[in-house]
Image (cartoon, rainbow, N blue to C red; front, side, top):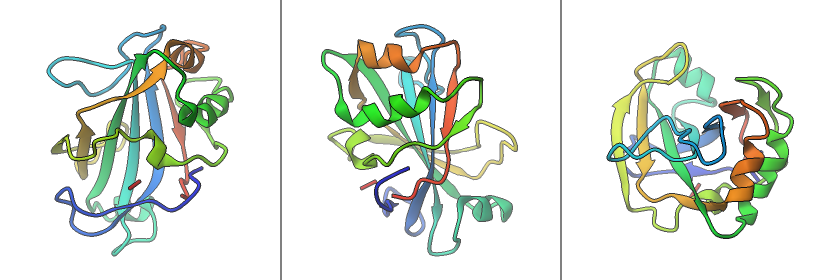
Length: 175
């Protein structure tokens, strides 16, 4: 869970969007390309997707999806760097409870802002669909062009088995 409520306004979004769910995607082996998205054909070891809904119109992500209304998804890539990133530790600890593909888990509270790139002004944006059923074409994707850095050991710890994704539901605490 997030420590606080996180909202996004701007980036071409129609209203104030509240973060509710975070998903992680990683490759089957250490340092492999696990991201669903790529930039100039480059994929990253880990991709974090932060799902948000328009809190001016809805009280939950599921309510917005039921009405087939626009939601937003922010993508942050994780790149292997030199040292540990302490902001990632609560996530790694929680992911140890993921024992099979598509497993959902709850995490200890963490500060989502600490998992964003230092420059928030450099991103790509497109309208697309959910990457999982029902694959509704209602997503405004915002993909940060700069990754955050984590250590090789941290990436290895997210890959303690051959899983490729995990979900964190009900984020209660971005910019």
